[in-house]
Length: 468
Ligand code: NAD
Image (cartoon, rainbow, N blue to C red; front, side, top):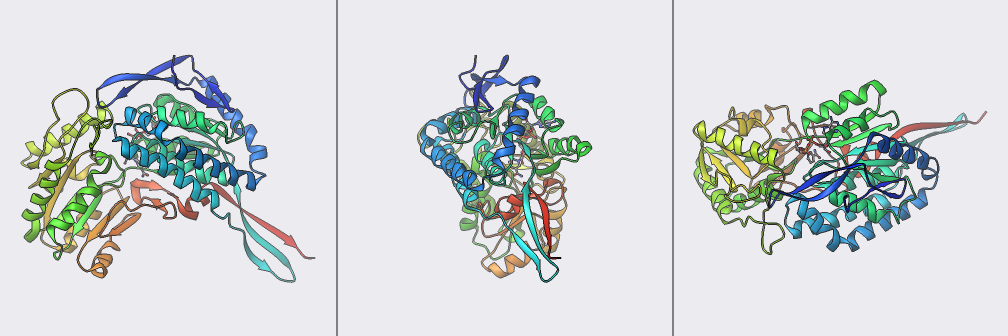
């Protein structure tokens, strides 16, 4: 039995089977989650399709419910945050910020205008461009920010008049299930359904007849499968996928100051952020100083169980990811890279890894070319800025990137040449509900957030009224 229940048609639902959820700080199963059956998926889809008919018609009720949902989540942060830390690993304070962040996102969408544009009003006709809901949205989320990334979908999808079936990652289903339980008192039955299960449940959702839209956040490899599964039914898709964000330092930066900020942009959530800095390009003359400053930061970082006071970085979320980071770091070291800080797993239970700064390596090393998604940062020296920009762009990824300089104008010119969805100047990971977020190339299709994110949950309808 699981103490966490699914939410289907507004009701609390258990499943015929459960699966174990591991606490990454201990490596032990610490809770069970319902393993949704195919029949229960059908029930959730039917509930969402049934609720759509009335939900789409009352915009005022939707705004009110989204505000209530936001208030409820924020007021229950103390209850949700430990559940999130227990399954994800992040420090309790970060988990609390995540819950509050989800509330902030829902509030933003609760107040966002649904545009009505008049494109013709003359003797012949009155013509408006309207945004209509699509129907049922299948929403699928990853394990790094289960709640906040769900809120990026819930807010705009429900505001636009759609209903939803949401599935969190099997590594982190619990806080999302709990959110579903809490929100039963806010949304009418069937509007917001939460189910849990393994990866197969995700593919059942994307292959299901009912949803008209799939909103997916996760890896590139799975994103491609989602796109392929959606194609035969021409389901609309938004894909928020992986990144391999470069940070390019220009030759006028102060190494100590910039290292502080670059470290924060690379190691937030223990490096498990789609748009974290994943490789740093540094001018040759500053290389040694920047590597030393980053390594000092890494050595002083407090790593531990996220439940403990004062911990800044928790474990890696799951064993496969822990093994992947270990493998990429070992591969770099075997290829001649130097661990200026860290370089190996931390002894003991749980999926802990030393915050690692890798020096004396370049493009071609796997940890530079691939997405590491963990607490290990390669630092690469460059001689020619144009070449550094080419190398930054020389990848299938295109999520975000940053350029750092004492001269913001100069940095902005270079940042404008990056092939990515967000180009930051002298910062990284600055995100907000009003800022559209998405990737070029393999990093995604479509965007989330801002009015542009809302449009992704709508179809355009032209209302043409003849005046004759
Ligand atoms: P993942 O692709 O393994 O899993 C994501 C979700 O997809 C999970 O819920 C999983 O159960 C489900 N899934 C797995 N196979 C499926 C299938 N065939 N059909 C449908 N759903 C399926 O990703 P992950 O390991 O959970 O997350 C890490 C990745 O997510 C990283 O690459 C990271 O960069 C990316 N990410 C991107 C963003 C963004 O906004 N661009 C944000 C966070 C994470």
